[in-house]
Image 1: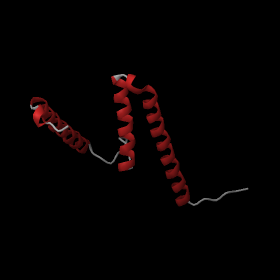
Image 2 (image 1 turned 90 degrees about the vertical axis):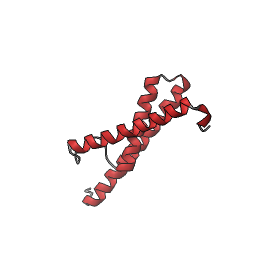
Image 3 (image 1 turned 180 degrees about the vertical axis):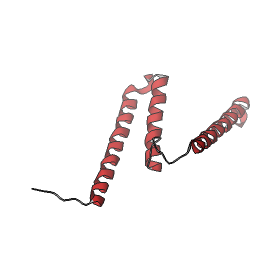
Image 4 (image 1 turned 180 degrees about the horizontal axis):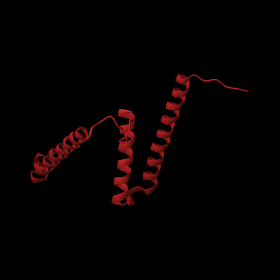
Length: 105
């Protein structure tokens, strides 16, 4: 018995399979985090956060960091923007730590 599938149907099945694999990976990460619980080491919390961020990025942008559509200059621009945002967050946190009365609960 021979099964004939169009390219479009194959690509749709492939996309659905990738989505299912992402869901399984995300659930595995959450299950691992739940089983480790409060005793989870600092490094493990960071690893879990990176994995969760990776999955959110894949869902949001439909690609990974393995993408090849950006030039090195564009990668540098993205990195610089992220670093600038980080500096702003740190400055905000420092301000709140220096003036606890102004911090929101």
